[in-house]
Amino acid sequence: MMQCNYHTHTVRCGHAQGEDREYVEQAIERGLKILGFSDHTPYPFPEGYVSSARMRLDQLEGYVDSVLSLKKEYAPWIDIRLGLETEYFPAYFDKLLHFLGDYPIEYMILGQHSVDNEIGSQYCGWPTDDPVVLEKYVDQAIKGMKTGKFIYLAHPDLINFTGDRDLYKCQMHRLAKAAVALDIPLEINFLGLWEHRNYPNETFWEIAAQEGGRCVFGIDAHRPDRLTDLRQEEEAEQYTARFGLPVITDALQEAQGRGYRLFL
Image (cartoon, rainbow, N blue to C red; front, side, top):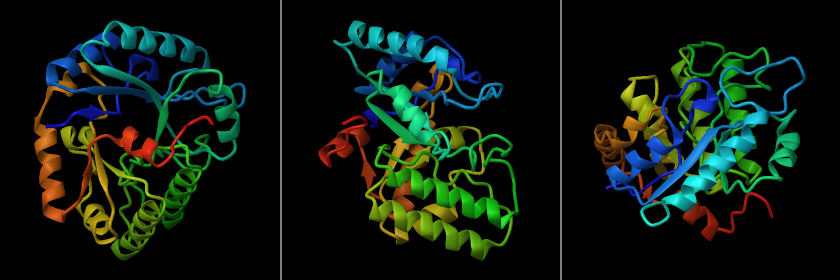
């Protein structure tokens, strides 16, 4: 039975539902020991650009205050952790880290939803047969992992490449090899299972297993009730059994054992 989930969103990102407290109560009902909130990070984009899929910079303080308050209130029943899901956008990443340094963020997970620096770039889950987009996705995911700021790579198979399959396999081998070399786990994403998205992708997970990858389960909850639905956990276990993938039960603890600290 799953004990930890580090992939949980809030309404601040603009595409999730429910109150923060509801997520905590549903996590307790499921029997989770650790609930990590990791809403879509704000980003210090140029003035005039507003992202439609993440909290604003001025919402971060309220997010932090809410999670820390719930952490204290529910401490007898569950361990709540404060995190963010973050893309690696090279033009703004250092500015983001500087901004986040004023807050007690414990961890980040890497979710590369678009390439370049988001502005003018399409969502990576939309179908594309462009080899350049595929290569950029892998390049940025690897560069993000190399920063040492992420405990795992969320939905690594998010890229919805519809072009040449041999090219896709080659790039996914490159991504999986890098994750193994950097000791970064790969997430089997329950939202993708729930909504029958293009991920989890069996080809990717077969490649990940061949390269010696390790995986972690992430509910990617955008609604409180997703935390109590056990069907996706059963499907994820079938993936791990089929490909012989080792599962990390506590990704943050495992990363901390390797010396992980978001801010030194």
